[in-house]
Amino acid sequence: MPCTCFARSAAPWGRDGAARPGAGRGRWSGGPQGPDGAARKGACFDGWPSPARGDTPRPQASRTKTAMARHLITSAIPYINGIKHLGNLVGSQLPADLFARYQRARGHEVLFLCATDEHGTPAELAAAKAGKPVAEYCAEMWQVQADLAEGFGLSFDHFGRSSSPQNHALTQHFAGVLAEQGLIEEVSETQMYSPADGRFLPDRYIEGTCPNCGFESARGDQCDNCTKQLDPVDLIDAYSTISGSRELEMRATKHLYLRQSVLKDELAAWIDTKTDWPVLTTSIARKWLNDGDGLQDRGITRDLDWGVPVKRGSEDWPGMEGKVFYVWFDAPIEYIACAQEWVEAGKGDDWARWWRTDRGADDVRYTQFMGKDNVPFHTLSFPATILGSREPWKLVDYIKSFNYLNYDGGQFSTSRGRGVFMDQALEILPADYWRWWLLSHAPESADAEFTWENFQASVNKDLADVLGNFVSRVTKFCNAKFGPQVPEAGAHGPDEAALIEELEGRVRAYERHMDAIEVRKAAAELRAIWVTGNEYLQKAAPWTVIKTDEARAKAQIALGLNLIRLYAILSAPFVPNASARMLEALGVSDAAWPGDVAGALTALPAGHGFEVPEVLFAKIADASRAEWQKRFAGTRDAA
Ligand SMILES: [Zn+2]
Image (cartoon, rainbow, N blue to C red; front, side, top):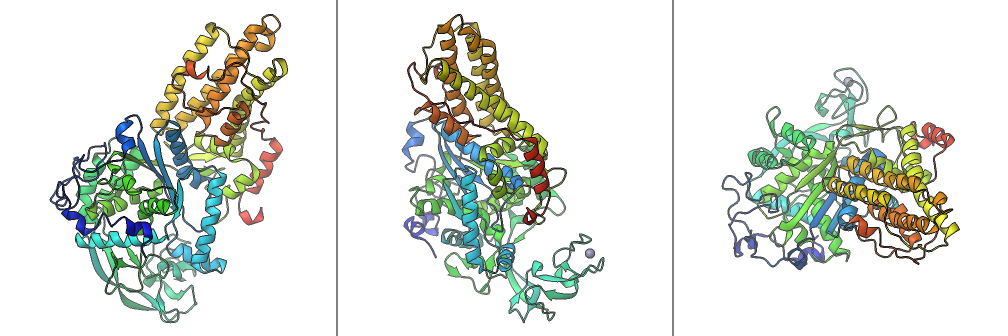
C-alpha cells in the first residue's frame, strides 16, 4: 500500500512520464562520472523520460554554492536476525559514518541512509525460534539495532526498514517496469511441497540424510558435515523442519526470473567506466560477469509468506498469488525507499532530488559501503534492476568494499557467539575506543585481525598517551599556572613556525585520504597530527620556560589550547564523543573545518574561558584485557 509521500510524488517514474518534454534523449544515470559512457549501447535507452541537463529546475544549493557538493551515502543494510559483530560493523556502517561525518564537516550536503534487511527465510526461522510472529520479531529487532547504531554514534539521517510500505510499493513498481521492458521471465519449475504444512518449503526448511556422506541432518541446500551443495530432492528420507512431516511431494510452481543475462554487456560496459573503483570491487564484479557461462538470470520470487507480495506495479500478477519477492531483490531497493521513509518521517522534504536524475540527482555523488560478500549484488543485480527499468534512477558512483575482520586467530561467528558483538562492546567500553581501533585497522587491502593485545596497545598508546594526554597536560597546566582562560598569544618562534608548516601539510594529506576513503591512511595521518602536537609540547617545555620567561610559556600554552580545538574538529569523524567533550570543555561554538592551520590556531582568543575535561580515554589494564579475551572466546550465552 503506497504511503502518502509516495502518492504525493505523482509517480514520476510512471509510464505517463514518457510524454514529458525531453523524452527520448536517452541520457541515463547522469552524474559527473560521464553519463554518456560506454554503457549506453543498443536501442534500449530510447523512449523513457530523461530531460536533458538544464531542462528541469534544480535545487538552488547545488547551483549557487559551487563549493557545496551533495553526497548520498548508503551502508549495506544489516540483516534483521540478531545483533551484529564488530566485523560486520567495520565492513559497512562504521566507515560509511566516518565518510558522512567528514563530508558534513567539510560543509557538504549529505544524505546518509541505512536500514534493516527484514525479509526472507532466516527472519522467519529466527522469529520462530524466538516464539514470535515474524512482524513483531522484526519490529523488536529493528529497535535493538537502531539503539546500538545510536550507541556507536552512527549518524544516519534515517534508519529505515525494508519491510516498509514504501519499499513494498517500490519493489512492486520495479518488477512491473522490468516486466514491461521484457526483462522478467515466468519460469515453471517443481518444488518440494508439504501438505501437512500447507506450503512450499524453501531449501532451509527441509532436512534429511546426505546422499554423499550419510549425515542425518543435512539441509536442503547443503550438507554441513561434508559441505556438499545439495538439492532438496537429493536428500534421503527428507522431512519438513516445521512440522517434521515426511510426506513431501514435488509440485509445480511458477517463479519470476530477472533476465540479467540480457543486460550482461551493458553491465560490463558500465563496470568498465569505473576505473577509479577499488580492484577488490571490480574484480569481483567481472568474475561474476564472465566466469563459467557468464551472468545468470536470477529467480526473484519465493514461496514464502513473509516478504513483499508479488505484484506487477499495483496490479495483481496472475499465477503469482501467495508468493513474495526474493529478499535480495527488494533489499537494495530499500536504499531508495529509505529516502522516502526519511521524508515520511518529516526529516526531509524531497527524496527525488537524491535519487532521480530528472529531479536533481544528476549532481549527487552516490557512495555505497559494504563487505566484499555483498559486491555482486551491488555491482550487478541492483544495477540490473535500475538499468533495466529504463527510468532515470541514480546509479552508484563509487563502491567502497571491505575484506573481512577476523577475531583472535579465527573468524567471528554469529552462530557460535565467537568474537565481540555490538551490544557487548558498548557494555565494556565507550564507542570511541572501538571506533578508533576498528577504523584505524579497517580491512581495506586485505583481511585484518582483531586481537586483544593489539586493541589494548592501540587504545593505550594512540588514544590515552597521545591524544588524551595532550589535552590533559595543556588544560591542567594552564589552569594551575594561569587560570581557566586562554593566555595571551605571542609572536611565533622557529618551533611554532615548524609546527604549523608540518600540520599544514598533514591536514591537507588527511583531507586527501578522507576524500579518497582511504580509511587506514586517514587514521595514520590523524594520529601523526596528534603526535606532532605532543612533540611540540615536549620540546617547548612550558613547565620549564615559565621559570624564566612567563610570557613565552603563556604563548606556548595558548597555542596548545588552540591545538586541542583543531584536534577536536579533525578527530570528530573518528571519535565523535571525545571530540564533543573537547569542544565542550573549551567552550567552542565555532567548530568549522580549518581553512589554513595558522588561522585555525588563533581561533581561541586570550581571555576565552575553558574547563579541564575529565580523563578522555582510560587505559586498558592487563587484567581487563585477559578477562575479556576469555569471555569472548565463544558462545556469547556463557558470558
Ligand atoms: Zn554430507
